[in-house]
Length: 291
Length: 174
Image 1 (cartoon, rainbow over the protein chains, first blue to last red):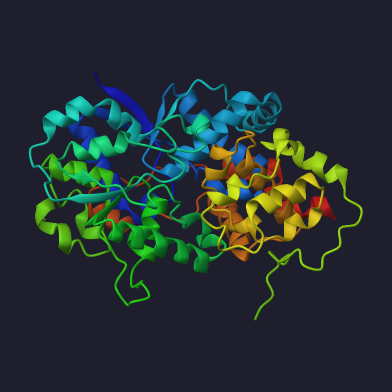
Image 2 (cartoon, helix red, strand yellow; image 1 turned 180 degrees about the vertical axis):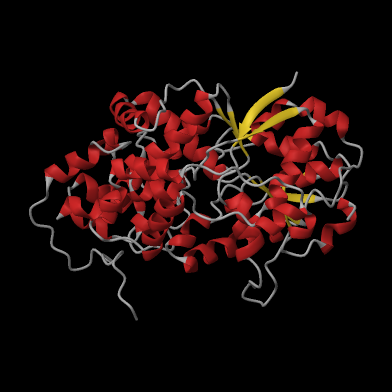
């Protein structure tokens, strides 16, 4: 059955990871998931606006939810930041009459209202439900791909808000990735934050964290990192460039989006999967991916 | 070296705690997630799983203690702004305290008091002026045959943010 969603892209994907959007759209088409353009979407507010002023964050984020609601659609987003922000807003507005009243008072002035009927989902959540369909579409097994999968924080936590997977032992996206013949390998710092929210306060601390993360992934024997979030990906595919450990060994590791891995295994058009835009060299995994 | 406006409370060494302020504890308890604040019994499990516990001057369990004691200098700790918002502490707290959510409320308080990293000030301005944190990169989108990102009514988001007082937050504390 065709599923249908308004697709909430957020700011980071159209700004620097158009390869994520392109590969998501190819996969969606292949799996018969209808993605409707999200007319009128602003920034989700994310942890940035939530840190500055929670009332403003609830209003801006609530406006996005109310827009989809006014058109009778559910929302899907490929970004952990947007997912977390929209889900968290939904959670607060659902639980707190006081906040809901204040936000709706502001929304009414621009002709909108939040009532809470629209569902917010992450794209990988939708993919997980289609696991059996995906399995049948794997025609180009990715044997030899050893993935350090990074789920990212806001896909999982707080689990009473995210409601997707076990917050301490997540496995759902790993299962999806392993359908391709790749291995999702265990690594020490898998659940550790990537550090990207700190880029705004202290790039220095954010850099220390990504160095620890990539050192752990490399130590585990992975030949790539896979993410499902443009904020995390900024750390793994942009900030990491040129970083070295104390022995002057490069800390770069090919960084792929979950949709690019699935797309390569489904043998979809490599050019349209956007591999050209990945910053860290993909040479170590080029042959496996058929590039 | 430039003195930052934030994170200046660096150690408990030599500090004298005089009258503690129960009103501050109460105020924090009314923040989103603050309802169980006083249930903290200092097991420090929050700091044990914190990705920046080895990178801050004041750790998250110490922040929690300062809050329970009504110690307002907490707004000057670096933990407030170096929290990555990963929610590991909140997920694991045996008392069910919404620690990360409380930290967001503290950030709001620190911002209003002019104690925020400068990046947040420019992010606020950008969000208000454009409704986005970053603009789309058109040439990449064309190469991948992606449609333009749908536009939105910037007057609507400005009206909304004006109503919430986003650009006048600092006025509250004067």
